[in-house]
Length: 125
Image (cartoon, rainbow, N blue to C red; front, side, top):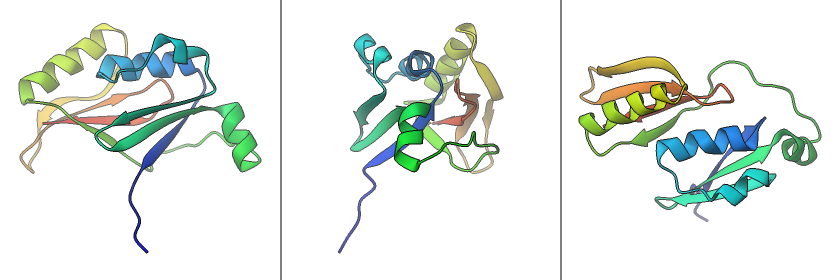
């Protein structure tokens, strides 16, 4: 029996704010999804899902606000220049940078931004 990573889920406090951030990253998410409690976006063979705290509470029986950094979402950019431009775009829209773009020792251009729910989101090229 084999397995395949199919979906990564994010619990969000404000669906519109979260979806706006991921739209700014470049994901194609219809505006009509802003009012939904569960949203899925297929990208590169994996679905990224967004659930409200209310949905998470119903699924898990309770919801405790997480603390700390436990998992990384990393988005591949077309080039170092594209990464730099995306980072600057996000900053101009008022999002928070965790680490400005830098050339990592492992050979990638890298940057880290913070999504509206406090998740650290990596950008690399």
